[in-house]
Image 1 (cartoon, rainbow over the protein chains, first blue to last red):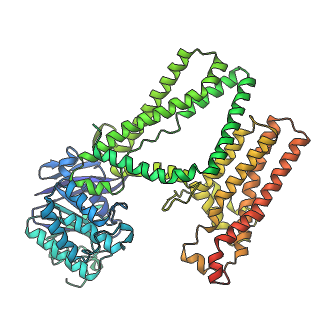
Image 2: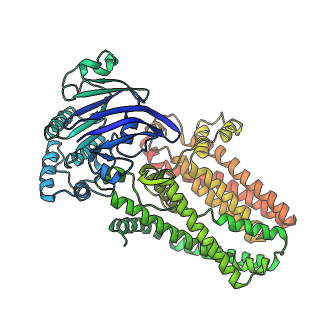
Length: 234
Length: 367
């Protein structure tokens, strides 16, 4: 699995938000996208999942171009948005079954995995709950469970730690390590590097829609504001 | 072949609509519609007998026919906000849904256009002396034009750029669908509270500059927020404009008691539908904390509502004076309408607002 982004520029309508972004993500690699509010992290992600079209540049995952063959490209991705989006008329169980159908997963095997994840996130007794009953953090956990039951090659997660309790953050990090070990790649955006520093292989620091620094923590720490790096190790 | 996803989404949406339709077509509404329909038919018959076949009536009719193309042209897609995320695993069914929904919308919008044109057939025959074959050709032309307009809007919404449609802009597609549903639910909301109905907030800088000229603008604490909400929340401003236009359309074709009765009905409908604005902040915790009494709320609402209703009446009266002979009967009709409006503003609205805040008054004596 290799994601190659080359000279990507884009934004919303006439407004250009990101400019000439290039990077690659190798199999089993976790890349952390960091930057302040408005630096272009979520815009880049919206391009990577095909919610926005590039103005220039290319996005290729495993030799499949996002623009040329969006169906085949998107099949390889699982995505957890910053704002959880759920179908208000489906309960948790039906959401999971819907994911199994869409990603054409083995039902018995995936339900077994789903039950394990639901237990980890303390949602196992809420299968008949509707989204309206879930708190913001619970909705976030539902989105995480649904992404992690898939066999996607690339997991794109936008600000996963906002709204999660500390136990859920640790559980999520353990799951990320598990999937990484199985060969999946990750692109995760975050405001604070400290939570991810022990898990990320590479950091990309965005400033005003452009890559201001990239590399390991050691390589970029002098080019990134100290508050973004944070102190605590997880 | 029609996809399962299309069938499910279509059924789901109509099941939802049917929940509200039974409130729209309740016993009282059916009687009101019956009378309104009768009045419209009578007015149409009068119009057919009296309208002269001259250049400006012919031009006016052609303009109205052209304007019908602007109605009911939004394509349905049945795409939801969550679809872009959930269908990452296989986007093909979603693309099929969009394609079939576009064809469905073209057929439905084309049929509505056909029916609208058929309504104008008697006028077209009277003003242009067209035979049946010409009328049929015009109707077919308008149906095809509406279908094309629907298709173009669907495609323009979905395409990031006009020359390719492999990558679909699902955000724009679902936003347009949400807007379409919001318009339908706003209609249902006239009859029953639709939970979760989100109205659009849009600044209108020109109107906003006029706010400070409103009578008592700086005296009544709640007046600025009522007025700002009215200007920026599309459902309220559109309501005022809609009622004003309905009245203006009625005036040239009706007269006497029927005209003043219908205008009074429009005033009542306007005030009844704008009253929820007085209680629209009840769920904000802020609204329970501010030191405002019930009579402050009622007074601010009078200051907000009276100029709006009077402006509507003045515009209607100007058109009545222009299109009808002004005599003592017209004067009595106008005066009655003004008195009726004052009663609605000062008595009816007070009672409704008091009921709105009744429960809160029970629990907190100062509010």
